[in-house]
Image (cartoon, rainbow, N blue to C red):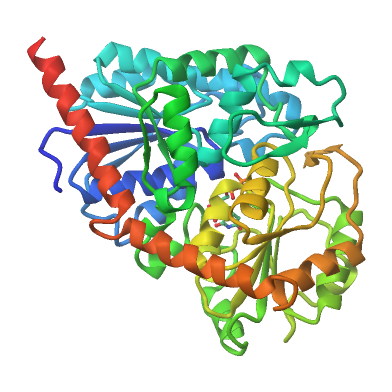
Length: 480
Ligand code: UDP
């Protein structure tokens, strides 16, 4: 289905890699259908994603990368701090959310000047102020959480039943009500990143929105989609896995940021390995492990006997051995930004050690690889439950408490020992103890993910559904 002319979607992601990347993929999916798309961001973020944006697949598509000024210094942020991964301390998160509100007027001005009036806003759930924009132009407003349907439903039910308030201690366990499966976790494993007031605004903005779009696919989470719709009465469209909108290697290699490694070197290294023999280890765009944990992980990876690619952040203190020899026949350390989607899709990759960010998790599912789940914070503990208990394609490393490390500050002192990590790696890569079935299930989800995105597949049809919904609304509004 090709969209009629004059359908204009405005996409406003939070400025964080895990939000900007899938939204750019959504922009691409819509533009492929002939929809005009304005992707809203700030100058430094635009510079980052320009390599993905300018790639061949995007050229000629009706997408504009819109740069609105972001006066970081005016709101107490360091000069040039335009992305969550640039924040020097966790406390400044609040300033950051506040600062995003400064985009409101420039965004309204941009849309006033645009020759195609906007028809639909797809906005990040943590930017509730965007409501004003939708109101000003009487357009459809859809929420994008960046989460899967399972987590969205968990958060909804936890709030509806006041579960958190009824649990006293942070380490007490709770059961999420109203789900098709029993999901139990510790209170402190649930995110508390946004202040109460913002959370309230987010909920209000969501309750009055016209629906949600989800980076997932029906074959993966159908029971949860059904329960979500029944529980909330809201419209929800699953349109993913959106990473599969990256068609060629040019798109994939620099997805989100320019890769820190020469792809050829990486692929030449992989080519010398057997299928399913390499473990890929990454903790996403902001997750970091503290030095003692890096030591344990390095030792476990080395002791596992498997080949591995280990992605670490620019400033991470690696164990000495890996610092001295980042690339050997056994391992490859990538310092900085890895071309994750393209690495995961290689047949040599046999397992993924992941922090369970939803993008990484669904990318692992697309690649059909089983995972070791190592959640750090946010929705990641819930994603672990989905992967290990519901989909049964993962082995938990057994982390109990959330941890984070930003600038000079760190939360949680829990260190997972090398033996424990070694056991999880064994479960991941070896066939015994259900490992073969886990791998088979993961492979099956990989196939289903690809089919969902093909012409006529469930997510393809749902993208059509989103566009049709907007077109229908547009015609109603214009005759009123
Ligand atoms: N990513 C990447 N290379 C890296 C680190 C991350 O391409 O070196 C991408 C990854 O493929 C995913 C996103 O960045 O699309 C990270 O999002 P996720 O939800 O997994 O975690 P977050 O970074 O938000 O914690």
